[in-house]
Length: 282
Ligand SMILES: [Zn+2]
Image (cartoon, rainbow, N blue to C red; front, side):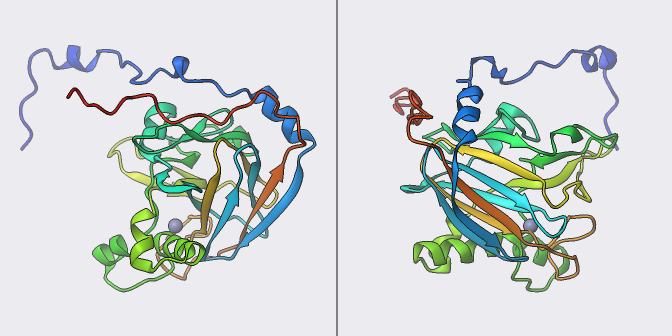
């Protein structure tokens, strides 16, 4: 049985919220400079991620990469590492705390402690028109973790091997020449590219619904540091019904890398690691 509310319950509920991390003092990306550099950038690499599989790709700092929907609606689970030190990786939770539950143009993907710096900046999002729907849903979330075989086993039993988690483990192992056991701890919470998600208003539960993505849509990033990316074409397809199975219709995802012309980024510097001295008061 719930406890009785105190006499001033309504007054306590009526206290206005305060934004935890106002983004005003974050180092702002120079989007105009990026747009100039992107204009004459040339395509240097292309990776097609097969359905229910993942692939790794490398993007030098100062280059761009684009994730596109091809053939049909498909959601992608993205991992990012510092290409020179995979201990530094995308920090979904802090990115959420800084920017909100879903990300779009002008927002950045931040790296783990003790590095905490921008790894990539979103420079274009053809789904930015979607905004927030009447269910509270939006696109490109940093609230989901990634579909994985452990949760699948917990909820339904069975051994399913093509969840995004396992796809990313295999892709990273192959790319780095690691065993699966060595690779697995490096796979982390993702950016859910093209996925439409939110929390239900009544119970606060994580929900998904059919992604509004269509072939030709894309999400494009500027790499702030040398990146190793891992992208899984989720077994949930457009995530309209279920994942962790071979039931959903799935499609590939395309990753393209673009190199700006020499000089078009003049004055840009890759961000350094975080300035905290790590003495923790001792
Ligand atoms: Zn997935």
